[in-house]
Length: 373
Image (cartoon, rainbow, N blue to C red):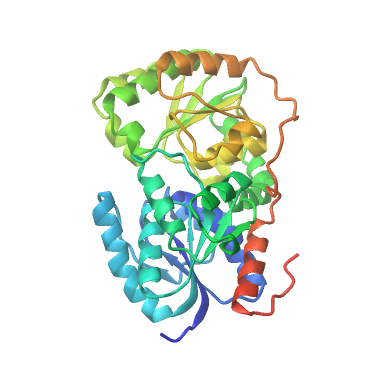
């Protein structure tokens, strides 16, 4: 295999795009040759195309177009398609991001082909073995050569699992790079105003299979939020998976009550604008816990655990689970809080994580880095 690119950077699902943007930009400015590959795990325009348009990501050099399927089928499709792409590109390092199926599939193929893997957002753990993302992130960490972490607790997790110290690099959070870069641009969208919301609103997101695929759990979550929606409008940009699971259910009838504002998935800039002005965010997403921490917006995580405990210890996040009474109590309590700007920003969440990753990879590949400051 003859290397024709320093880095083959993989994106596949909505969370990857925000995290990849600063890595691609910093790597290219540092003088690293980059090939961008989109697996097509998220192929809907609302979940994919809009992020390339808004974040300034270059058009993918390679698109695999694998589409949606079960975890097993989707992972297998990505592996089969990625194997051929890897041989064509012949990179020196494959860069994978986060914990989605594409992350695991491409990391496995690279490792079997003896191409070093760099894992961006390594070391996160919620210790729930039933969560697909937990399986993905654990496996990827243990076949990666370069592990780029967002926080010191992630470093500690890796050390406990006997990952070599020289492989672990605390760099900060690339998702926050993108948030800080585009926050002022997003504010100009005035998304809340466009929805006719002028007296304060909440934001809800639900997409994880363990939440939305269980009809009883999904109903419980929405039942806990319904009283909140009667006090402050709850904007609910709905993931396609969630919309499909709601059709014809009692949970769907809950949404018909006043106070819920259901929308299709929003673009990145509109969503950041909406969250930045929110009184409260309720979510089962990991990345949104990080964004609200930096924006100073109270966040309730609708899961029994989080792989991002720093958003609780240093940020604005609180893990409340899926019990409707607990959700409602915590939500009303949060609505009484005043945003005074006194929240802490986690270490190195300063907008320069992508640059640190680029510098590490330049050193590892013996590439004379161009200044990226």
